[in-house]
Length: 197
Image (cartoon, rainbow, N blue to C red; front, side, top):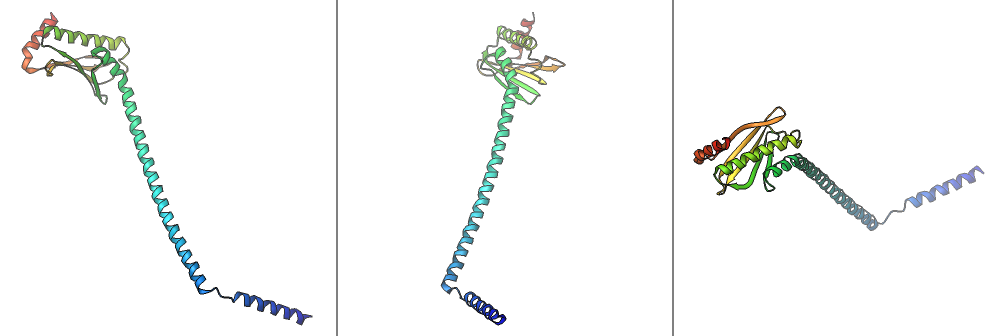
């Protein structure tokens, strides 16, 4: 009985060895190797494409974040300038130009043109006084906090007539300087003297 089991065992082993000994034809092997190599190339190309897309996406996200940050900054600056613009356009005209240099200087340029007369100088001075009163009475003082506020007024020919500069003093503004066209200084001084009488 042991002998019969042994013979069956040997026959099964021979069958297994004979089956595993069958060689794959050379052309099938070469075809499989070529297909594998082609798949490796495609996989490498896909990985490279993936890395490019990933880098482009990261770059786009950085650019988008940068644009969003810039937009937030611009909106913040515009909101910060909303009160000074409202005050300036109310006092000096809807078409006045208003811009700021941080918290150091607020510049207002009146688009209205004036003549070099005592009446024009008096009108400018009255507008400046009214603007100062409105700043205090209208609650603008706590929202307009610049070291200096400059107000420019031009003549009909486009040259500067007067620039009045206010400086911050505690919780208010006071007159810092008045300047004008040096070529017409005598006429300006005369107009300013008439305004003070």
